[in-house]
Image (cartoon, rainbow, N blue to C red; front, top):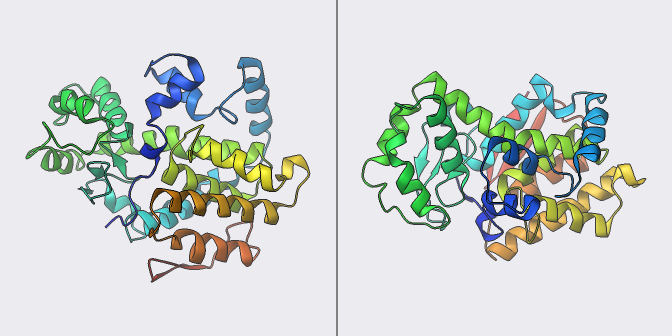
Length: 294
């Protein structure tokens, strides 16, 4: 069961980020990729090309297959109270967080645009899928907690579709393009270790790729007001501590009584141990439950 829920609608759905960055409401793949990988929500084509070339020369970090698997397991412990992230393709429920249905391996939400984007892209490739008929309803409820047009059939349709390899791959692709790849890219540009890249990734999942309020890129800017990042000549431990501080503050701004253990007894534990490589064995707690990867 996902305990915290999607937070980033409080900032802006992904479509709003596109408007901020590109002056357009376009939901094209090119625009979304540009929004997802924007450096601090800005930068022209030449700057991005330069950054891409720099990132390509760097070690894989969190993108290395073994590290990426660890990342998915740790995030799943916070999102679904399990390490078995591959068992979550068919997960769907309304957890009462004001974002409608939460579903799939990364907690796509009907109220925060990413679930709509996933189903739309999947339907482009597989027009006869069982979720396609819900696209009009998903567009209508986007940005709200409404189930109008989705009940009673949408949850069962999601679970049935999740048994198909193509839909599972579509979930992974959306996760990577919107959350994982942009977070790792930004982490590398900021000079962060594998641990730092993971901390960015978890924040991207929780807060979304927003450029204002408590969106991910806004949190990066807030953290840099408190401590220099390594690419600015700062100490990574101090910078990551500052980033975790602003992330926790953003969570509490959203809901004062929110459980912040995904930071307090997981990420801070790794940081305090100096485990910048995110190396096994790893032991942590989320919501009072203990986990380990050995």
